[in-house]
Structures are given as structure tokens and as C-alpha cells.
Amino acid sequence: MTATSRSLHTFCWSELATTDAAAARAFYLPLLGWEPEDQDLGPEMGVYTKLKVAGAEGEFGAMYQMNGPMFEGVPSHWLAYILVEDVAATAEKAKSLGGEIVVPPMDVQDHGRMAVLKEPSGATFAVWQALSHVGAPVMAPTHGVPCWYELASADVGKSGAFLTALFGWTQKSKNAGTDAAYHEFFADEECVGGMLQMDERWQGAPAHYMTYFTVDDCDASVAQATALGGAVHVPPSDIPTVGRFSIVADPTGAMCALIKLSMECHED
Image 1 (cartoon, rainbow, N blue to C red):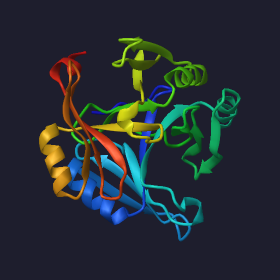
Image 2: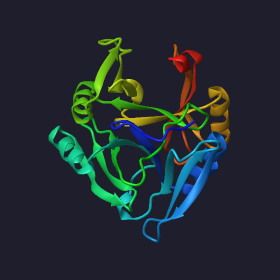
Image 3: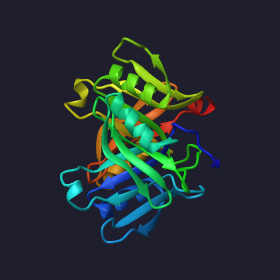
Image 4: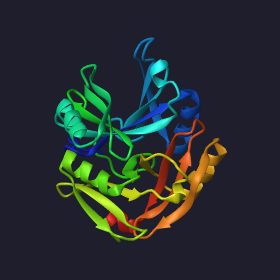
């Protein structure tokens, strides 16, 4: 299920910042079959819970409760990390390209260095420079594992130009110039994520990155998410040749997507 290395400029970590860690655990652990490993980082930082899926080597992400003045008014959210060679250089380049440095480069023990950035349409993401911890190993699309990252952009033109310049990605567009336009990003030959233009269906929501988690049965998982206190924002829907997906919010308001990948997608 795993590989020992990960390519630069690919998504490498999924992190839930929540207003209520207990409520988040009670939702995600039974829904996605996660196994938690708590790490006490002291009175200031609190507990950082690494997450893995049974049968997989290594963690794919983590969750923590937001505490203190710096998180005042910040809603629960998933943050996606992208692996880079030099966090400081990437942050400065992002700024020169019209992005914003939200959290400046900082050390995370001896694991690596990180920064939180904002792309021109307003979506935040993190970059990670690995030292002792490269992030998540490459994993097969098994129930509970992140499998896709998608930017819902307020301006796909600006966002696409920013991301391709920052990471050296190439961009390929399907149905370009139509309401169904979808944009994919590639690091070398590896497809790393997607992007779509936000419209009135988003009802004024801010630009954001969406993390997709693989599930064995989309409809059953959505029913379970509802029973566990979650809310359905996009009901189960089919994406031709890709799979069946839904967007749900956990009881604290953080949103993610659940997707049952099609056999055709697996074969590709």
C-alpha cells in the first residue's frame, strides 16, 4: 500500500484544524476507519493526533484543536500540504507572484519546515520542506485515505497562472470555455490535483481547497456521516469515468469530499 518516497510538488499531508477535537474524532474515526496516535506537544500547542488507516504503513495526516488568540474566529477546516525543496524560497516566490504569506516559514521540531500561503483567489494551503518526515507515504486508494485535492477558485485564470509558476506544474483543461470546465495540474507526468471555477452555486463561499477521501460506498458513507451528526452539502452524485462523490461537513463545520472511485478510474 505504500512507497518510501514522494515526489516534490505533490500533496503530502492532510491536516484538520478543528474547534472541537472530541467531536471530530467521534465523527471521522468510525466513518473512515482511522487509527489515531496522540502526541502531547505541551500546554501551548496541545495534542496533535496523527492519523493512519488500518493495514497502511505511516500516517497520511493529522488533526488538532485550535486554541489561543491566533485561532480566534477561525472555523474548522482541512489544510492541504504540498512538498517543496525550500519553504522560505517558495514563500517568497509566492509573494512575488501575487500570493500572500499567512504563516511565515517555521520549524516543526526536527520533522521539517512549513509555511501557510494564500493563492490569489483567496484559498489557503501549506508547503512542507521535509527533514526527518516527508509527510504521507504514497498510498493505494483504500477506504479512508486522501486521494484527490481540488481548488475551488474565484478566478481560475489567476489561480492557474500562480500555481504553474510557483510549482512548475503543467495545466490541462477539459471542456475549456464552458460551465463544465475542469483543470488538472501535473508535476512532471503525475496528476496531482484539480481546479474549478466557483459560481453562484457556492453562494458566496470563499475560495478553498477540498480534500477527497476514498470510501468503499459513497451512499452508505454519506448516510453514516449524517447519523454521526454531519451535514450533506452535495448529495451523492456521479462523475462519469471517475466515481460517485459527495461533499459533507463534520459536526464542527469542516468540509471534505467522500468518493467511491470507479473501476475505470482505478485502471487509468
